[in-house]
Image (cartoon, rainbow, N blue to C red; front, side, top):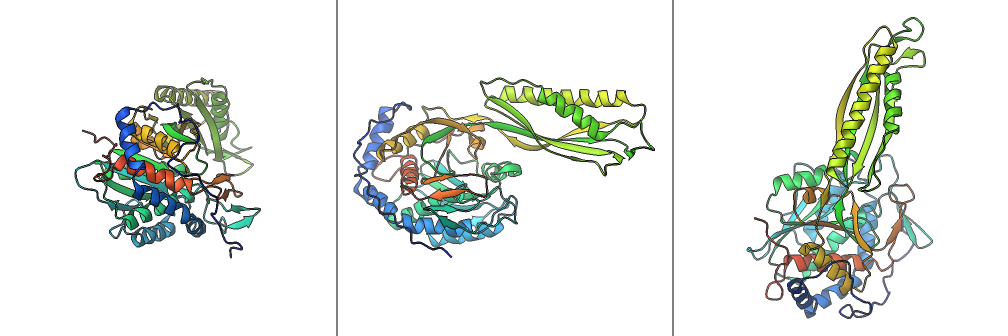
Length: 437
């Protein structure tokens, strides 16, 4: 039971006046500037933004409801079913769940424009047994997954509702999705499936997390492997002299720990988990560790992968040479592959996002690099960004994750302006998203 009534009563100065200096991080072309200013001056758009602000108290209640529907990795079905119902109730009557488990709703435009995809991910990092009941403490709502990414899902529903009620006709087709598999071993499987099945997509906006500070225009790539060591195994005393899978694994981990990587472009690695063996008095027949490698440069990521595999093979050879009997082998099993990507700051999708920050009088801190669903389209050469969903929060990926609805209405407002700037508004502003050849 929730013990308070949420009140979004903070006053915002008229959104169409700029009390601050415009951002200077993203260069804005005159054509994009002119089209966006025409859109933002449209009285209907001013009214919609005010309505999004007025609706935010109910939006936060919706966020709480979705948070309390668990969505562990590879077990997003319950939340997907609920999200599908909410999409349909907000006007996307033909919304459906695809073969990968993504919830997809398409709002058709005029028919002669580009196709824009807006996404937020359904899954959280937390397993099935974690309690996701929301608790209010000191003005903050605490629950695993309440910000990452239930906030993004909430923003999607808010802007779908705003579009439906307004009756605005866009130039572009807009695909909305609550996608699976963003976290951990999900390996971006949801968005990978969408781009496999929808080659017509011309641009992508991911809404992920809280705190509106930056536009994510770069995608940190990752390669994740399970290094599996196998040998004959035996009794610790009676079979002494056999090579050990665990000893070989230990040698490999020690060698990997000594690898050096550059600070720029940032390139990292860690052995995150280890497992193996049968008992304390057995020579291990099997052992495995999971290795995470990341970089903002695809070539450096490949080099790091090759070096890690090479030193693991050296470790196996050393373990086999140490003992008289038994041959240890190692296999490298890929368990995660997130591509490196980048969207240039001069892309219209970045320009529109920067102008939307200005329109809402929000300072743009920087253009960030992260690992999000946007990695996939970036790597395909499709313009893509990630923005946050608004409000304040912290403790992401921990049981003490929290969200506070401080100026949280700015999240739906920002997403709406970006969406409409890219999709275009018939008889008002052209679609600023460029159709790909």
